Amino acid sequence: METAPLWLEIAEAPDTGAGYWVRTDDGLRLRIGVWVPPARAKGTILVFPGRTEYIEKYGRTVTRLRDAGFASLVVDWRGQGASDRMTGERQVGHVGHFSDYQRDVAAVVEAATALDLPKPWYLMGHSLGACIALRALSEGLRVSACAFTAPMWGINLPPQKRAVAWPTAWLASAIGKGDAFAPGTGGQCYVLANAFDGNRLTRDPEMYAYFIRQAEALGDLQIGGPSLGWLLQALGETRRLTALPCPDIPCVTYCGTADVVVDIPTIQQRMAHWSDGTLHMIEGARHDMLCETTPVRDQVISGICNHFGGGSSPQH
Image (cartoon, rainbow, N blue to C red; front, side):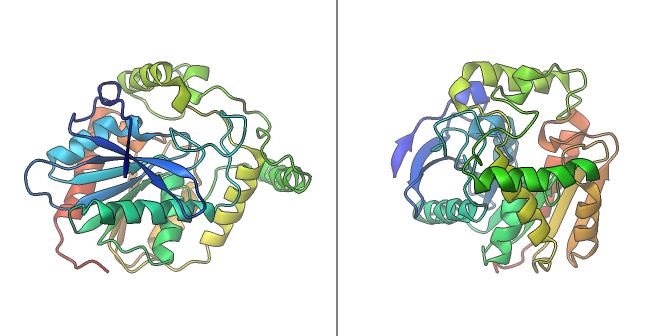
């Protein structure tokens, strides 16, 4: 695999990280970042980021994972980060079909195999990453356990906005305008467009400043709002996911009670039917559980590492 850049200092990530370019079966170039601890690893955590995110945003998280003894692989999904963008407008978050993300998953698995990353493998997905992960698990992705933070198994839209979003997004896609920004969104990334006060991601001002430093230093990795096509695909995929049975692997999920991005009742319903699953609702926490206040970060990351490291179940 060809090496790819990683901005480790800006990420505040271990300097042992390595970046690689990988190819999907439809010819797109994706970037992955890999960290392997110097001592014998407990396994490898495949990290599936959320919409707008990129590898460097997980710098502090992969440091915690390494310190806990895990290798990690983080991916830039198609259309964001340093991976190939889907339209001429770099700032719009767009995808042709949500099933295309499964091509990215396949490329990640192929890369992890080629790099001989330590087993067992585990899966950690945040927001959009958890949506992609649930589909991947249902289609046979082999991991020993999974963990999710603020999973986008439903989108928090008021009924009246949802009623308008469906036909608007469908019509735009039908007439070839699916790559246009969804109404009310634009090209500027969230943290540069919104002050800390009232933000929907975190209650920790230092973590928000960390986001801003990265956004200013790594401007080419940023995206703004979603396209109408992405919105249409996301609404359809989250509806389809409700019909899927829960995978037969251990799962732990964390969600904040103050999350206004994802649909909390959908998460609660899913986890209530996950036979080997546990849901932790964290009072007052916002959407970005891995970048919340220190006590929340400690609870979530420690809980995920214990969930992965405490079991000896074979890989499915």
